[in-house]
Length: 140
Ligand code: ZN
Image (cartoon, rainbow, N blue to C red; front, side, top):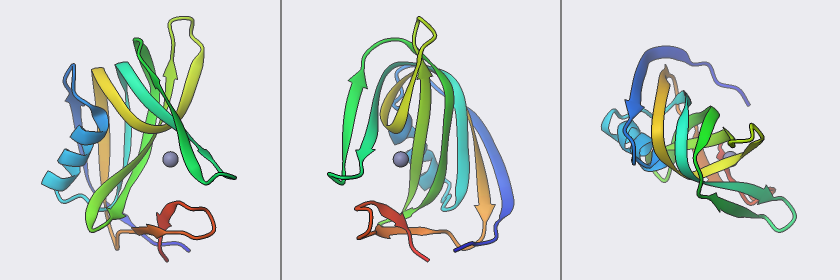
């Protein structure tokens, strides 16, 4: 399954100290009606909740890390879930000792965050429940 998209526009911005990344990005997507796109960003957080999908149990396990960390890479895509713009984001964080951890991003509190959203023109993918994985994946 493949779809063609063209770049419609690029938005760059930053979030403020104390903002929660998922809720702020979702708000930006809804306010700008962005239904297809790519997101990337770097910065630093004071707290993050990241997850790992247990493929056998078919559920996320997660951990909340309450410490200052660098965002080495935040990356994700934008599609539609339950008729609303939805950002699926993954993150790599580094700790004070330079070790890295990462996973599916559930929540993160910003210390500083600079991001780009590339809005795409084309038929947006919609997420629906997938029996094979237990995840909400793009419908053909
Ligand atoms: Zn994920």
